[in-house]
Amino acid sequence: MTSTANRVVLGRRELIAAFGLLALPRGIRAAEADRLVVAGGALTEVVVALGAASRLVGVDTTSLYPTRVVEPLPKVGYFRSLSAEGILSLKPSMLIVSDQAGPPGVLDQLRAVKLPMAVVAETFSADHVTGKVVTVAEAIGDKAGGTAMAATIKDDLETVRRSIAAHDKPSVLFVLSSTGDRLMAAGQATAAETMITLAGGRNAVRGYANYKPLSAESALVADPDVIVLPDHALNALGGMEAVRKLPQLSATRAASAGRVVSMDSLYLLGLGPRIAHAARDFAALLHPKAALPSLPARAWTAA
Image (cartoon, rainbow, N blue to C red; front, side, top):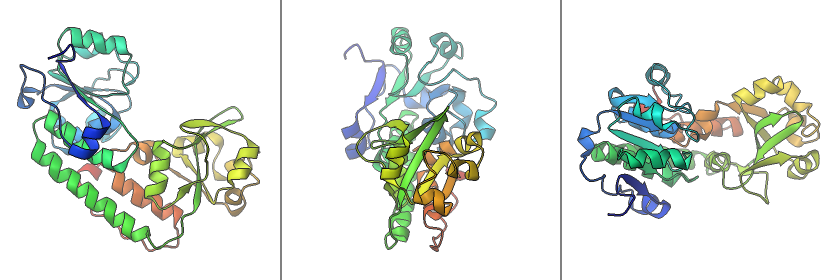
């Protein structure tokens, strides 16, 4: 074993192709991981969906769903700025964490005291979500449950795909947030673009990755059919009419037609087990005249 012996690291290829989990750290069995700390909202959703909520002893501040489970739990900070002392004070038997978590020094501290860690790689794809489910399930000793859950999510995603296949693909501008007069818009390789595609749209922004400031000129070049914001961003900007009148957006087709919509940010962008239901609800906003089928309620969609 190498110096990473006390963690579980799963790369993108293994997640998508194999849906497997590397061996747990020597000296611990998954069934013994009865005190879980989880850093990553989607990972927490998976743990709860697998029926392991009672094993959670702490979560990070991005773990907001389901509220009835996460609200009473101690918080260990934002997943990118974790505290080793805060985590260890909860006496966890395992930390399940996104590979985007940090800072690196804190994770090194936790490895140094040999806290077992399952580190789950994050990528922006639907296939990755089902791989993430199986990975977390195997970490907590419920591989069969994870496999069944992943299969159900894939089936639900396929139902959404079929329901929107015959419809046109509107161009969609996703505005993540605003700071002063600066709007941050989603480019390629983002959770927003993944969800736009799953919902039967196409990203109106081309030419860059991640989230970048959007100028009025760039917005006019993009000229989206629909503008989408997280609920909190829409409210912060003063509602739909205020967004339509923003200098950066007022000349676009979407603003002129009043096609400004919003969704809960964690639901839409979390890329967790609710991904199919979020894609279906997003599709209904992008295709308001389409008769889209509802998806069956699942254990992981019950707040």
